[in-house]
Figure (cartoon, rainbow, N blue to C red):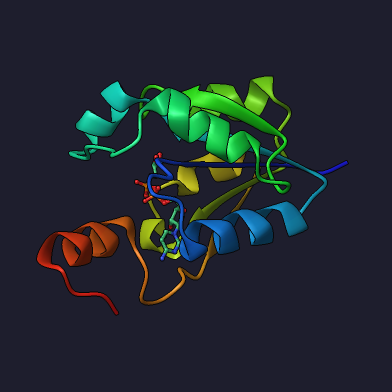
Length: 132
Ligand code: C2G
């Protein structure tokens, strides 16, 4: 049973998030998602529309997702990989190279991002009254 791990904010859930979660789950049989807390979001200079609790309920409803844990700091990944017996760490390729240090503990895979969709784009288009 290959265990997969990924992280993110997953605000205003969209096709790019679903594609990532779907492909991550296809790499194994159990997918854990480290969901950024509201406090950690601010460290990433992000302000989610939905609270951590709200985003957690949404993620837990996705059939590809088996477990959601809080992502509180940049430094928790090694411990999360080891303590959850993770075999494969997955992130979108906008993060390519950033987490190669985890290769000492598990396989690291960067998957192509879904082009043309992002939470920022959604917010900007809703704010300006345009949509793609
Ligand atoms: N993603 C994607 N395609 C998009 C948008 C996002 O594949 N069009 C992927 C991202 O690459 C990431 C995941 O979906 O792997 C979640 O995206 P975000 O919620 O934006 O996560 P991010 O802020 O990048 O957080 O410690 C890692 C960070 O918490 C990652």
